Image (cartoon, rainbow, N blue to C red; front, side):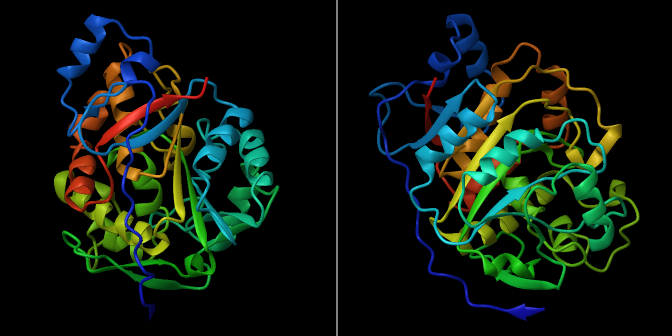
Length: 344
């Protein structure tokens, strides 16, 4: 594993602007807004039109889940995306029923010059455990319409974690340093250990190398990795996720953006493949932001606004998933004050 100097970190700050408060975007009444205010969501801050004090992040939203609106949102936030672009996507286990629609991702990737889908191998033994099997799974799931870079195919690279809670560095797929910018295209859903998988989980686990970085992120260096039931979890695991995510965010600086697609939100991650539970919450839409904390916070808040959210909320809270948001705030990874701006 080779060490590298971190890039100059460009601090991102949110900027207040006119738009829609979340309750306005979703068309919620007074009763729903009151119910949401009582939801145990860490650090939730709705900023109404002209309201609030200080800065807030912008989160753009559409209820339409298709390539046209995905591209529309990206074009709003892509000012600092340049050069060779990595599209971090969770490509899923073979025949996964909930992965993002291939045609939508294909159109999105074609819209971005010099872009490549990037992934890493898994820590668990499955369809993406080795590079050879991973490439077979990519073909099965239809991700062979463009180059896919398995970033740890040739090893890993150590990225520093600035003022991390537990980690000082994380081993990422070595090819990550080949890219100038990153687009984090996330299927927002539940997760067996994290409670939910948003933009943070997509880069925190998804960029970490399969046989070193993912052990660091799961807190299992020097331990048996045959089953995750005995692995560290709850708040400690959420803080490890934040540490790892911060390494990638710091590396790319302002040249990283985030899109969360809120469709087919099973309580299980796409790594569960065909065994993933059928979603019981309806589709919501797509969110986009340059702020990782704001977009994951807004996604969680939208889940809590739903009346059909029982299963997903139970998964989130039973795993202490909301602590992901608190940990990101502690690490100053973004702004928990945000404004949702509809593009519909």
